Length: 302
Image (cartoon, rainbow, N blue to C red; front, side):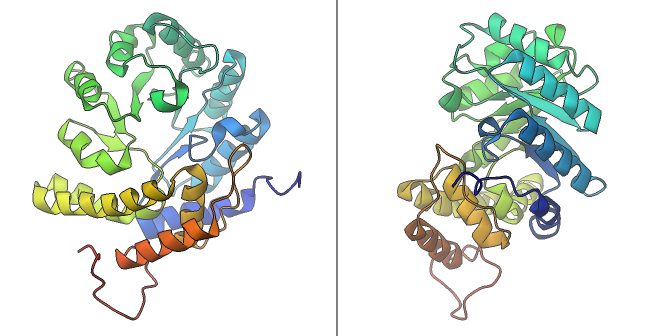
């Protein structure tokens, strides 16, 4: 019915503790794709942002709020609100119904949002598969700091490593954050110069991903590759079952024990069959802390 898809604000504090203590994840990107930010009302988005900032204080390093919307005015309101509550940055996707048709139009839109929070670091969130806005990120970044002085970096959620590599290559002298958003390809992006990552699987595979990042840092590339392949085995498996935001919620509930609840329409709740299959795969890969008694599962990752 109407009320079963209300936001459960009371679990956010628990969620913060889980990410920090169990997964070693200390940065959060709020109201993005996974959080169904664009399915929430403006007042809901404000309340979610407030709750994360309040509960994350002194526990999380950075809380970036996604404030993108189809309406420039709403986006500006959310940006201003993020600044008022003490968020560490804001991010914006390209408006995706009436679309900007070239990079200048897109930058003008982003500039107007950034101007509503002139003290906050600003990130462009590039996710062409969902926005349908195919303007290359490399184009958007060209000269962007001159137009948007608060521009701090990019969340790049696309598989085009030519575009991503050129974003890094052409902006070497600038201290931009290059945050990669395709979890199953993160190692490739690190080689291309990614400075961080934002993704849905880090909610429950954060610990494993941190092991990969540590291996990469110490230049143990074969170990880093093993970790990436291990993550890929899981993602490849669930992608074949049909993997999206609803399924991510179900997996997070399963792994964390925190009830993430159902998604909001137009998404449908993940099927029981999906969840059972995903659980079996997580167990076989040794991704669940409460492991089965039978040791040495064949698929297990070291």
